Amino acid sequence: MAAQATQEATQVLANFAATLSCGDLPERVREHCKTLLLDALACAVAGHQGEETGQMAALASALAQGSESSVIGGGRLSLAGATLLNGYLITAVTMCDVHRATMTHVTPEIVPPALAIAERDGLSGRDLLVAIAAGFETTTRIGIGLDYPVFRARGWHGPGVIGPFGAAAAVGSLLKFDADTMARAFGLAGSQAAGTFAAWGTPTVKFHQCRGALSGLMAALLAQQQFVATREFLTATDGGLYNAYANGGRPEAVLADLGDRWELERIALRLWPSASLIQGLNTALFDIVEKHRIDPARVRNVNIALSQATFDMHGGFDKYQAKFEALLSAHYTVAVILQDRALTLAQFEPARYDDPKLRRFAAEKVAVRADAAIAGSQARVDVIMDDGATFSARCEHPLGSAENPLSRTQIEGKFRRYADGVIADAHIAEVVAAVDRLENYSSVRKLMDLLRGIPRARAMAAAE
Image 1 (cartoon, helix red, strand yellow):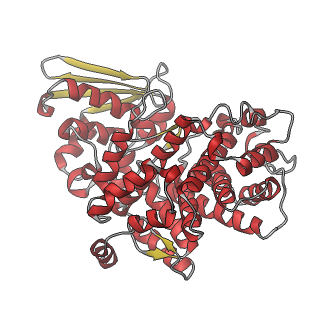
Image 2: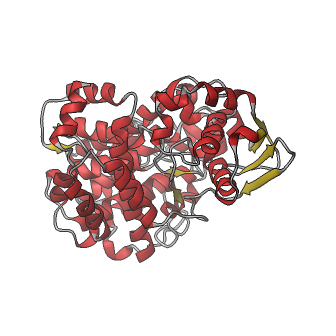
Image 3: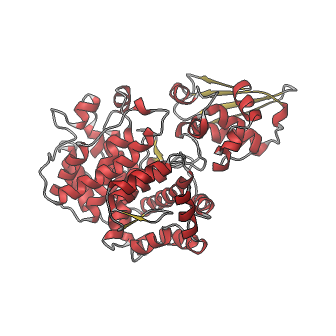
């Protein structure tokens, strides 16, 4: 399926997404897609603990009337409402995937509309697997064509800009689009591409992701109606994605070894809640606490070296406000890992992050600086004790990255931990088994039946 770089990128990528079959997916790619799906489901059930989840649920309920689509860990909403809310649930508590080359969270845009259409139309697990692979690869391929440093310098945020293309690809795959219809879906997706880092530090960055899911769904459903749209959105001279967002971009990168090298394999995962760029910090610090029994009361200070980009985004939350800033704070992450030797959502509840001792430790004993020798999500940690002893670690590749991947067993554990009390106990193992044999699973409707919330959990959520 290799493509020629001289062809127009939108149309080649549209043909790729429209003609992709399960047989085109190498086994390692199929397995990574299933891991990404299970991780997205784990994040979604955890997302019911998000501070703003109730607000997004209210919007989703008001968006359209209907009950044809399942909410992960919830009840039923309209096709649009469930897509929007499931997208928010996946990203709500800051532990979903990230494609680091474009700093884009991918599964919140791709998985929800794919699940909604597959459920509505009674499609198979194999259909879903191909669709999410098409969506993941489309998103990441378009992303690497953006010339990310230029794109980022203009303030753009990836999920809401490139996510709609992947969502449209996933839905188009399920609806059996031909290449021409898929290209028009991409044109309609691009017409909704938006979201900037002006939203940084607020939950609006998470709204970019679920809105990207809904935008891609609308693009595909409108293209299905033969709505006229440009078929060359990526490279259009006047207002095309690469010319308007990134000085022409690198469209040749979109097509290089397409179908032979899979960019979706570069999508990284997170075992721990907290921001993507500080996963290297988490990895290094857990390396220290797992090797040494450190008494936090005897810590003189902790020196943290981060890349300039990571420092700029996460080095200024020494006096964090509420849960979202705690999730972004390098200072708080260090303090709570040293105190608790754990980092789960329990560490981001008000009773924990508002503990005066933790706040003092984060503000007074943790020093965070930028280091030119540190790149990306790498980190160096030095824990200095009162007696002068120093424990150090450097992370080159965060846990969950392609170079240091999480195992399926670790992702299963993440799903089981956060599904407890949200979906029925008997369904938890069934969901894991369904994803494990997705290409042979008969109906996505059955999977969504398993994933809806238990009545008790739904009643408690409504009361709140």
